Image 1 (cartoon, one colour):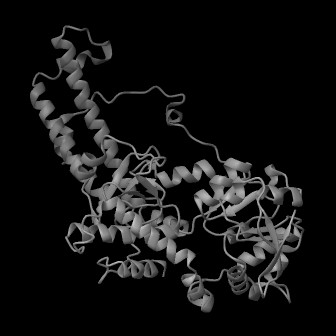
Image 2 (tube, helix red, strand yellow):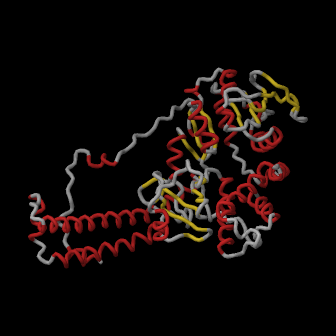
Image 3 (cartoon, helix red, strand yellow):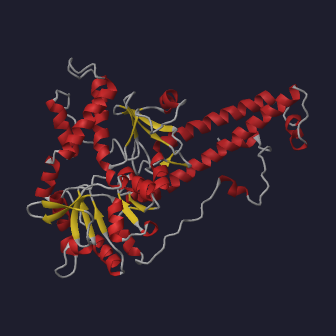
Length: 459
């Protein structure tokens, strides 16, 4: 619906939006918009671009390498926009479609000179307006059953925590009326007896204005004294069992006597929720990643594909190493540089070295062609264009995963997953492996004795 509201705002501004619709498969979270080139890219944890799309057309691997081979995505620069929320996916889809229409020459003459960066500004403003002008929220409040998929286990999960002596706080940017409507719909029918959602929380803060809520030390806080009328009054510090507007996290810490090391904040926004609360308050953090369930299913379906792909890449590494060792051996011989004893036989046994190198080169090209096709379809069970949410390439993590690792102590697909553990559990990090761990206690052997005849037979 956010997309639809944004599209109609653009229509009113004479943008060519006729015939377009939201495509949920066009963009996923964790991608990055390149405002200068009109592209959307997926990069690994270091910022190297692995896949790219211009407008609504995926770029080939050669086009991607030519465009981004010499640079890294740096989110600190204004050129890039990180898609870190589901709301930003609507923005990216609309941006990609407008770039496509501009390239096709569909824009009216008065708008034809906008350029990609200005198109992004217009699209972003249109989507932001849909969010803040309350039209979308009003539609949701009128029929919440059309937009909310209830999870009966969430209220019970929080009830377990509360009965175990934990203090529960609700901190949201939504206003009081919207919060009341959504929480009542999602919680009340799943709580025991006449208990209501507000009974779960020791403190409720609406209209919190995150991330400012976590950054500013003192901001005016108001107590909601009449929920029906929305009447408020200013207070110095909050009290338990009441609802407030505004304020700051530090005011909440003081009122609740919270220890930062014992506080965990759960949210679904990498920046507004987990990043800012960790950097400014050193709270523990938990990120909700709803796509995680689909990702796990897709990974299970793609096990055979990834195994075959890794086997091909291992074979390519083996063959290319043999090629490189042979080239190095002849290079040393030509320069009259003595070779190590373990490699002297390489040249002596390869009288027809040119023919050997040619065979190896042909084999490497064959493997490259197979690997390229498999890389393009890797992760197609999650998204046919972008592959897996958490991975970039075969062995590396996506930039999205890097952000999770950096700012979230734990992550999960839904709050109710905590119900699988007791309220007293202590989550400990798993042992982290390093690349050199694979060689611990082993002597590394280089593959110098590859038989070229075997390569011919394996084709």
